[in-house]
Length: 203
Image (cartoon, rainbow, N blue to C red; front, side):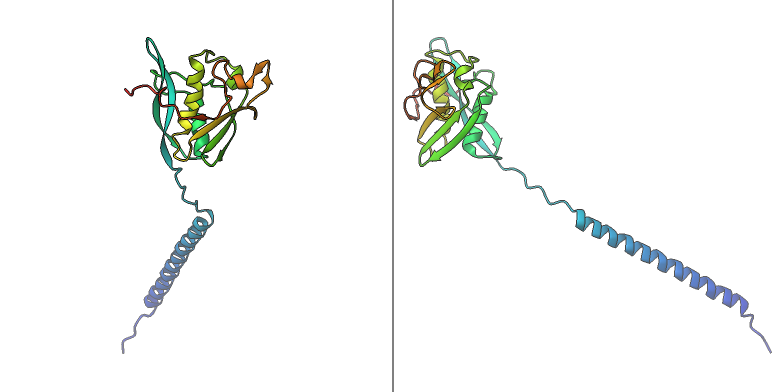
């Protein structure tokens, strides 16, 4: 009668059991890590960043020839991260990109507020616009300054007229200068409309 040696079989079965347990542990650990990672990603997931839209705008800066000075348009792309009329004025104050053009407003100027009433924009500048002589005050530079503001704002389709204020007023004194006189020549006594005659030829 033959007897089977069952000892190797028992060893083999134990080995299989251990391998199975190890594999099971590995699978459980892998699943646990995957689940944890998914939970972490869910908790800390970043919302997709929506890009700020941009738009091409038209600004007007000065350019002087041998006999006459004009306003010349400059087109630039801006982010629409605030009201468009405010962007227009802030970009105008920054000055031109082109070296062929000159700024029309002092760079220290700030926009206090802007309101739109039907087709009228009321723009209120800080006192720097009349006290800062970065742009020389003359009978040439004053209309260029005023109509750079007016013509830039009337690029907006709904805007036909512009009123300019200084520190919330269109008359009175600031540091000995009369607000309504602006730079001492044309003045800001009236509501302004677009002036095409002051715009020079392109190119």
